[in-house]
Image (cartoon, rainbow, N blue to C red; front, side, top):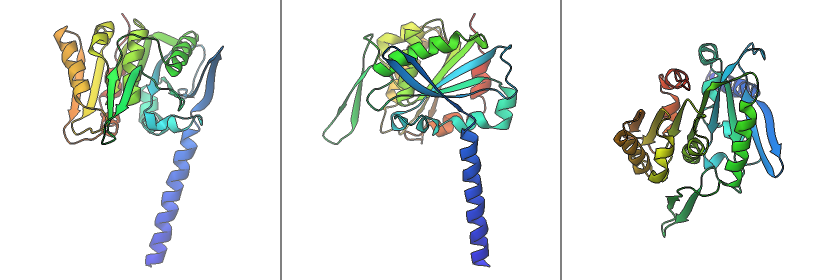
Length: 262
C-alpha cells in the first residue's frame, strides 16, 4: 500500500510539473534587435487577444540569478501569477519578461565584495545605461508603438537586480509608466526626484542579507518627503526572497492596473 501511495504521489507531482512547463509555453518567445542592441523576451498575450483592441502592458524585470541567454530563466519568479485563470480573466493585459544577459546588468550600479564575500552596492546618479538597459529602452519603445498597446496603461516592476532596473527605467523613461513596483531593489537617492510622480509600491524583506533593506526604506522616505504617492511593505522576517510574499499580495495587481497616465 505504501508503494502504491508513493507511485500515486510521484505521478501527481510529475503531472503538475508537466502542466507547469506547458503553461510557460503560453509565453511566446521574442527578441528585439536594432544595430548592436539585442534583447530576448517572453510575452504573454491575453486570452482571446484581439489586435483591434488596446491592452495594458507590464514589463517584469528579473533578478541576477535569472540572467542568461536561454530566454527561459527569467520566468522563474512571478510568471506563474500571470498564468492564473482568475488573473487572466480579471486583468487582460500583455505581460513581458525580458532577459538580461550574463555579461550585463539592468542598473548602473557598482558592485564590490568585502572580505566576507558580501556584495556592496553603490548606485550611480545619472550615467550612461548598461548594454542590457540600452537594449531594454529600445525594446520598450518598440512595444509601445504597437497599435494594440494602451500607452496610458504601461507598467514596470522587478525584483532584486530587476528592482534596481525598475527605478532606472522609470528615470530614463519619464512620463511613460502609469505605476510601478520594486521588490528588494535600490537606487541612488539623487535619482528619486526623476520618478517622484510615478505611483510606486516598494517591497523588501527585513532580514535581507543580499540587498540591504535600507535602500528601499530610504527611497520610500524620500518620496514621502516630497509628498508623492508611495506604498512601502516591509516583511519583517523575510530574507532576500521577499518576491514570494510580494507576488502573493492580493492587492498588487488591482492597485497596479488601477493607475493610468493623466
